[in-house]
Image (cartoon, rainbow, N blue to C red; front, top):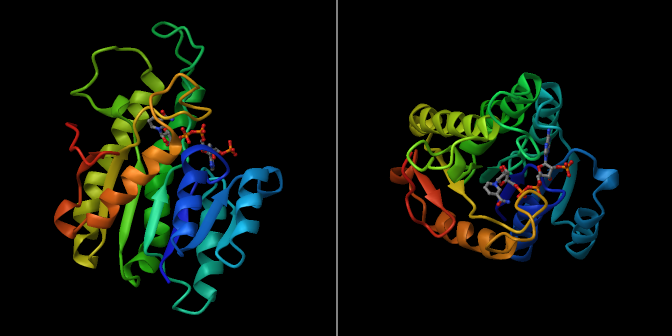
Length: 237
Ligand SMILES: NC(=O)c1ccc[n+]([C@@H]2O[C@H](COP(=O)([O-])OP(=O)(O)OC[C@H]3O[C@@H](n4cnc5c(N)ncnc54)[C@H](OP(=O)(O)O)[C@@H]3O)[C@@H](O)[C@H]2O)c1
């Protein structure tokens, strides 16, 4: 049985990843900040007894990340391996802001903690468990808004820079982890109907995640360091 560890599993795209991988028979380590308040995730876990394990994880809390790795490591080597790490948790701190001239620098730092630093900390902490799995893959959910080539709209300084920076994190990860056989890529999930994307977005979480999963299924080490759309198209940096 393959294992995936998913951050930001309480709602939106993360919850949908849990749903689809559990339905396919994977073991899902579903991480969310507040398990007690994550009713949709608890309901999903009840539908797949023994498949979805809910863990408390704030990705900005490095001690908590290390604690989770220890818990998983203490289990048997078979269940302690992670085939697929999905760095999904993210924030969009620019909504409702006035843009240039009104930058909230404290919030910018928080966006970097969650959107940029956390995926690297997760990779650093779980690399050993990923390396001893079959699939050996790290997927990080970025955004086209982090593409410098695609920026025709300006603004959204906090989000855009945190996602552009995580793209660079993953490019370096792809190089550093290649000797361990680990594939690391970033995905733009599309404009998705979630709390972040809003009701006017173009696609459902179901469409986004099933597209991303199809691309993940075909990934090889030669793809490491690429920036994909949910439909498999390569996006310019
Ligand atoms: N929706 C879109 O159109 C779109 C487009 C491009 C990229 N993305 C990216 O896709 C990913 C998922 O977005 P979404 O649309 O599903 O957003 P969402 O509905 O707002 O969900 C965000 C998720 O991230 C979690 N999260 C936030 N801060 C966290 C922290 N410090 N530690 C752990 N979890 C945290 C939230 O947990 P709580 O429930 O505890 O708040 C929630 O589970 C994000 O990385 C986002 O940037 C989304």
